[in-house]
Length: 104
Image 1 (cartoon, rainbow, N blue to C red):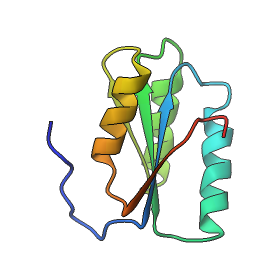
Image 2: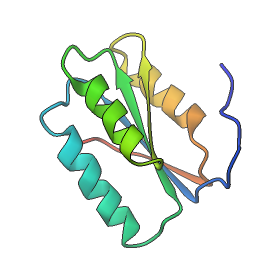
Image 3: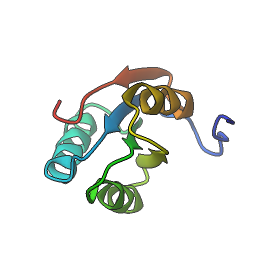
Image 4: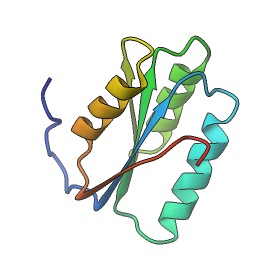
């Protein structure tokens, strides 16, 4: 695995959130988190570490990422919270990295 290229200025804060079968709360939770972070800084990214969901979570995560460049997502190949969290931390570009749950 390779760390993502730093093609733009790194954000101050990365928020890594493992998600699994979260279609019911994903969109609202991410929008609330974006609004809360915008109140304090524009220098953030949110990484949705999807890990083997069987519902619409991956598609919703991709739609949110397509809508806002500060939101990124990837799919870990199996239901593995620890693996998805570890990969999300590895992909984080921020000076500070916070790990959070989707239900905040």
